[in-house]
Image (cartoon, rainbow, N blue to C red; front, top):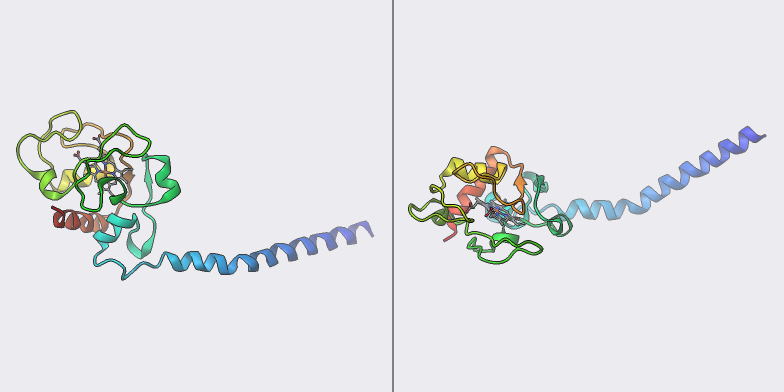
Length: 166
Ligand code: HEC
């Protein structure tokens, strides 16, 4: 008798869990739907820049970066601005965002992004800055700049987009 009622509870338990699952189904599928952003942007690079989502609309993993970025989501534009010019104070950080337009990063001369002077960026060192937080001199960038786990195709797409900013 005891054994049977235990089974009964188990059955009821399982049943209610699966019903809960059904109740959440529409919610879950609406979430999946909302990540379908293909077509909203004219290139993969632009999509990554504005949304932080890469191939197939997947959110690009990163470490470091501020806590609010995890809560609110977003891409490069959240800190470097829609036009890539940066120049504003980042929420909950003492840092100001630098310009990341291709011209600004790669121009010869007085490159003072951050406190230290360093050589101009090139394609390779820009990729390294995005994925490893290092400037051309090999110095670590401030930890408010996330380390993005972009694949090669996504990196190339972002760089192509930075070239369109000026
Ligand atoms: C949460 C804010 C934030 C986000 C989001 C962000 N960045 Fe940054 N980024 C920064 C800050 C701040 C710096 C400057 C760090 C420093 O000076 O040490 C920086 C630096 C850089 C640099 C080096 C520039 C330089 O002058 O040395 C590049 C390149 C860059 N970011 C590209 C990107 C790209 C591409 C994305 C999107 C995939 C992105 N960032 C997203 C805040 C951000």
